[in-house]
Image 1 (cartoon, rainbow, N blue to C red):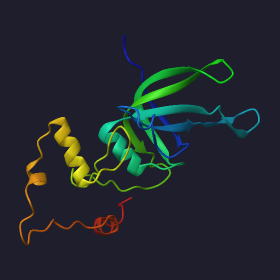
Image 2: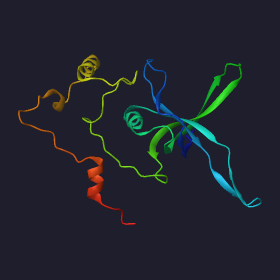
Image 3: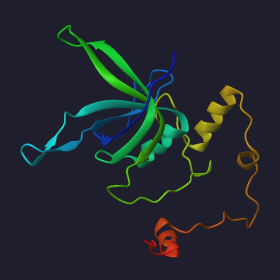
Image 4: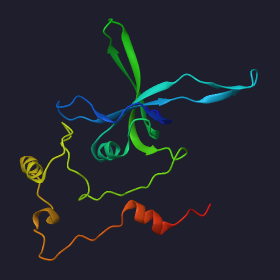
Length: 183
């Protein structure tokens, strides 16, 4: 059987949240609302279609980047595997929701501008995927030791005297260096 792959445009209805905090491996999700307008030729007016809601799930590095980048109200473009979830509500009735297991999440630049900032492993805050907690260096080292991971050369080598990280231009400085768009 084949997966149903969809691309949905919509707005985030809340800031991204972790599913089931503190309960094993988890993922990040954000709910998006997608609606469209159409021009009714009979009445010569614009009308809104029914709003559709989707729960969008993601994990690992994608979840970290979405957590840092997306806020409530942001216009998003999401591509991923479509599915449904079923649960029993408080009234005992079965309820359903549409879900998307995200392959890609991005900001819809039809409505604004954004600057892409590639994150290196050094820039990325270490997060506990079970709780969403940002880990300090000692806690991260302890978790890696428990998992039997070997630290990378950069993590294990102390900084040499006088050695400095290369300086990067700020996002504003980078945009000023690029100049105005040619269109």
